Image 1: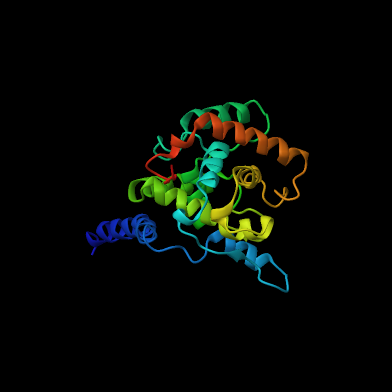
Image 2 (image 1 turned 45 degrees about the vertical axis):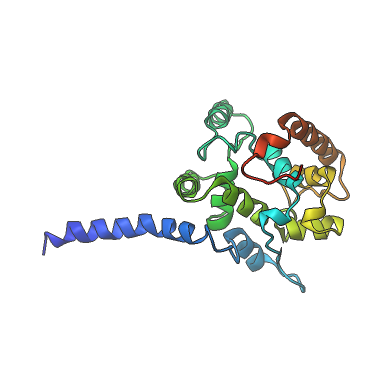
Length: 232
């Protein structure tokens, strides 16, 4: 009986560690019907209408300018890294150690892990789980799928999730009709979607939008080559 306990414990630990991988592998092909962040908003909402606005759109039905705007704003090395932007993590740790403003250093892949499965906050526990999930996402999903899921589950307003719902809510158009300026405005609110709005945009959002447009021009249309199809 004593010999069975180590094997049983090992099996339990293996199941605990591999269950997230199985879910992530499934979501490589199955579009997520809901995320942890959406459920949180739903449970906290007392709205009389729909508590969450969310409409899935495949990447080919989202304006390429929004994909480029999101990468320009949030994670410019996304096509090349393996889930973590180590230079940004180092800078954030140094800033936090000096007692400065607490900074995040999350890649797009890390944000997908957090939004899909976890909760907001900056605890070491959450960041550790996020890092574990990020490794599996990078191993099991191509970059195109990571970006597609990100654009569909990112929060763009208090109860608005994903590119399609955001384009309709803020600009009255579908996600494939977003102009570069509107795409940049949406990307500008990603760090704080419940605080800022892309339309009407205040001075801060306009400043961020213009900076993102500059970054998009600097990166160029080919920055996401092989991930997002851009018509010539």
